[in-house]
Image (cartoon, rainbow, N blue to C red; front, side, top):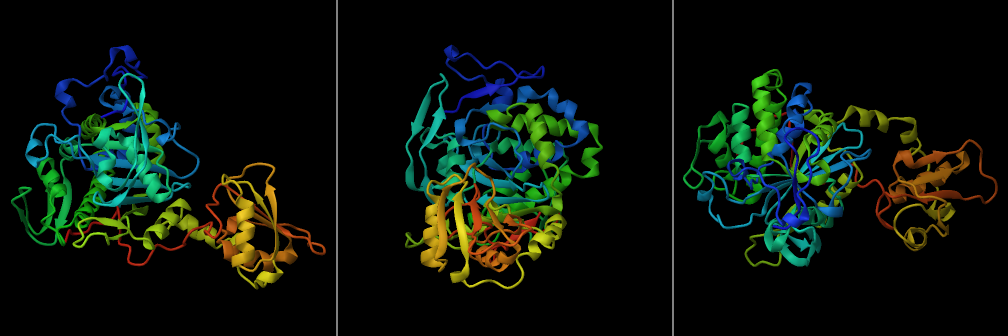
Length: 509
């Protein structure tokens, strides 16, 4: 698979990349290298959560040599962390290399994006949303550029109407192609990726002494060789992998039901990683650190233990109870007489993506509840002017060319705001859309805010009343996505979206 890999020195710090003239990637010793494919995000999620422990820091510094890195170019961010929201794409690949994994079938495959989770961390680090993406989702896989072993690049053509899981490993696609595919579907650009394989589930669950699970009924699946009693059990190694692989034991035997079980398993694993039994046990921490770093392949921007620690500490700020697991809203593929694949739900999907793009929490977070009751939120309450009485000058401080003009056209033609004027580009770019208005224009401001879905933080009331026919000033920021699209996105998740919290145990149905 294209994708220029590098290795970090096991002595700490940044190891030198192999010269292009060598014509090949640096590789782990064969014994530890036999693990190039999982579909289980458990290892990555566990690593991210536990790495915030102060006791683990010195250990990770010594484990740079375990980590593989791939250069994905501009598919991700060059910064380890950002000041705003962060999106991390967690990929589990189903390549069958590694001891004991040949029996799962398709052993000659280069692997697919078999289990994928987009992990969105809020700007204020109070909450996170982990959205599973079905592998059988039919979508467009966009053109992507991959790095070759000799330092050159190859452009892999895009293809329409493909299964999502072929965005990795097929036709030379690397994780950067999966990142671009996710951005194409959701409008959310992943900052980084983390990829794990079958063996990661085995090694990580064994390192922590097993993960607690609960079955609503006894399980006996001859295909995955999974046998579990009704009620609570503890699984590790091959048994943990079998649980995450099985389709025939739950629900209607679909990939969507398998995803639910995976999410429940990940929640349990996170709880185990953050338990005092793990964090106060040096031996267990060392085994976990060794297993986690050995399991990971990441983008080069976070390709050493120190950078991973920095990222993990940032993500570790999120309270477990505010991590929500859910599945991308989908419907049966209408193009298939007997649906086998799925497509994005055209209504619920965009509602959820808009929520995530606007960094709207899916959990009850006290900080945001308090902010919603603040003085700015109160500005949205009260009388609203008629559209014909709203006067506003529109400037473009965002990234979309011609946004001020298209917004004025939409306001006039669709909303009846005839007294809106295109003032072209703002003096400088801004991140967030703002509406400046005078106290005696508050009714106009509330009306415009409702039309455009402006958040309370966008409302900038002055101290002096406007005189005569003076207009308000609307400056579009980088959060503006197009005329007629709400700035804030929906404030509540779509109806019937099932979500689970990482801090609650649920029995698999």
